[in-house]
Length: 204
Image (cartoon, rainbow, N blue to C red; front, side, top):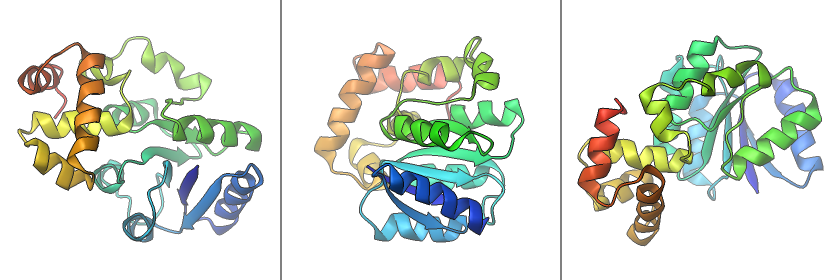
């Protein structure tokens, strides 16, 4: 399991990385979004990328969008001391796998990171009600992995399979497996039906 932590607070970043390493989770670190994107491009694929919402380069949710589009299959989550519930909700709709408050105890932080790296979404208990009454896009994507959400969004924009594979940096056989699972989860049998479901839910 490989995790990338991007945070401009040196001490916090080092503490988080040390705890993950203690649990036999390989960890790389970056002080800002620019370096995080460079590490993603140059390294073997990660299972999870943790982004500090307020570090340099993020520019709000724009930084999340950039990382989601260039993550090469890694799940992506936000970290912060705290975030408004509406921002967390927007991040989930965009394809984030979860949100980690920095106030979590370290053991809870590690377990949440491990869970998200395996494709399970995570929210702290105080934000769990977000999932009780999801917006249409959230309802459509709640069972999907971050990669499947990326694929569905690109489908909704009219991209072909080879264009989606190129955009995500994966091989077409891998994409076909992703599509098969995606179609099953959202209850469709064709590309066009998937595009329609995404557009009807406002997932653009």
